[in-house]
Length: 361
Image (cartoon, rainbow, N blue to C red; front, side):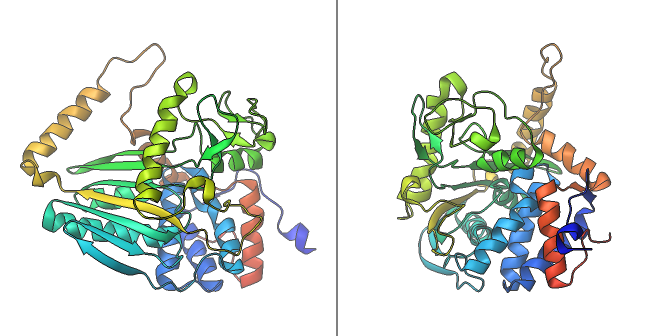
């Protein structure tokens, strides 16, 4: 059997989450990433894959392997806190994987919030960080309301614009909810994230209308023709563009890093030069403002009333995160779906590093 025949994609492949996590960590370690990097990158990607955010899940392993090997990402970074002022600090990530940088920053933000009630960390010299919700959730799991933002290279036009301006500039917020799953918002400020376009290309699916444009600004549903994305909001896209600007200010202006239109593109052609992304992590202790029992009672009443709200015909009312938590429960039983392009790429990694793909549960 030839090498090409040995790495053909299988239809409807699903892999046990724990086995997939181990495979991902083994591949990153094999390419030379240090343990902290391999752990953080795997943790973030598995967050996306477990919760059904496949555009920012395990499929990113192929890209990360590429940029580790070309030298864009530092396999052994020296992360340093440059200073602190009250409840804020600045982290120089030394061109680390974005997940390591942001988990590190959020951990410090939570620590500051424990002392001050609120903590914020500006991140310098970071890189693509994957699912923003992973870092907001880390704060919520520590009892804080968490917020994470990062800008990215220009790929989103302005409202009624016809050229790339902002990045997809994600924003994520998670709020603890006592013993229940946190309220979790994770969104791009574009109509869809670009990684969803790449996923749809791999799956051969058409995009929804009004979310992407060709090079001249004409709307397209063909993922292969996408040259830019629309801002969130459709006919009211000026709102999405404005929120993208907020992320830009917190991620790039406040951190002294590059604006979206000054960043090297994520997918090249230059895959060797570090991109120098900025990001921001914020943690707030609810019990710094109100008694913990009062906060949790308010969250319970809010979410119970929201979920009990009368739906439209054929509609379902859900709180942010409900869909993702339900998908996580399904995938814990059924496994993580692997798209065809990733299946082929992962089989190649297994062949190269002497691993088994798909890994046994």
